[in-house]
Image (cartoon, rainbow, N blue to C red; front, side):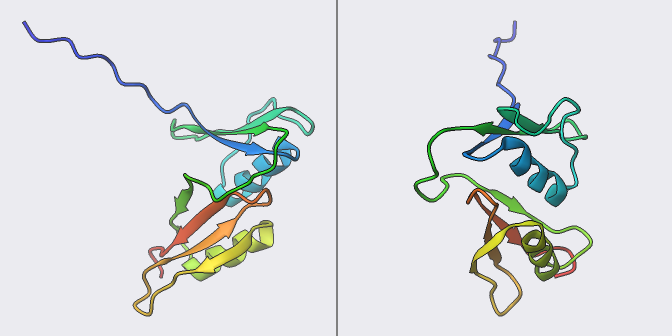
Length: 130
């Protein structure tokens, strides 16, 4: 008889703490990622969710009382689709992100570090178009 293995957990949410309105931060990420907010989310709710239509983990935005105090210990790395890294960075900034650092290498590799409107860092890597 085969030995039974315990089932591994699945990642249900990737959670972002925020001191402002979770709906506003979720709206930024919804526009950036092209993913919809949950149907029942509205401004002023204590949390908001962005759904992954392919069934992956949702992004959960939760109101907390304390400000961010240090660099994120975990962050998202985004790879542009159908646009260059520079175009994706420009688009993210137009949506409300701010650039923290540019680690683009002369060979085109590397990444750009951005922060969302609450200061959560994320990186934009080189995309298929550069």
